[in-house]
Length: 318
Image (tube, rainbow, N blue to C red; front, side, top):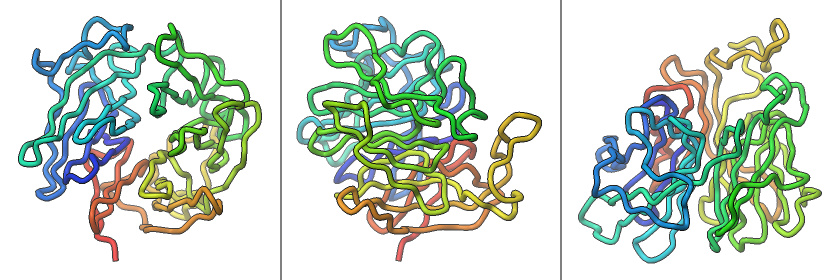
């Protein structure tokens, strides 16, 4: 399954989970029963093309659909837009319409189109502004590697595409060591992006990205995805210096290790106004759940996603 990212449909018990493996696609999770089911299966009633997203004439092939980063934005009462990073069969941002106006039924999902990534560029995370402008991160641009960003070199970038534009373009000044999780400011004034190689949240002004507004380094864990939880940003990731894995991530034979050794995890909230982190929860290495990459809070439960595991984890908060 590899639920690399999670998104909660507001004011409902439903959670969307990506699947970072070939054919894993999207899952819809009922937080009351803790049951996950396939959500997009490519049926004709799940397809409703919108000319705003013209790059693909057909929806993702369910047998190939490889979903990574998610971004869910409410556009009207009971309706939302879901953006999904897809690696299955094409490198694109898939766009779906969610309808959850019927509180007694499972939300419906319809594919509306896609926005293709530049040739050779693999998206990691995605977000959008209220005017429909989409931004996406690329972890490693062509010619760079994971080893580069582990060693602190700039490898990625944030790419933007406004409605009506023909392609994504790199935003100058956003090249960081491992551009990963991404979220827009609530007032549309800018965005927050994680520099994975530095464990930093980096804030930018939308009007001028040449220099960051500020940086905040996460305390002793490596945040991956980042999403709003109320008025704070929720981040999740693996422990930086894990004794069970010999400490920090190693470069072996000139290559960064694959992080398959089981590391502890942490979830924290960042207040953008004060730039201070508050720990939400943490845990030791788990033999069946490694690679923590995302978190959402539903009621009193903390739900954890992973880019390596075959399940979603749930923990009751105090």
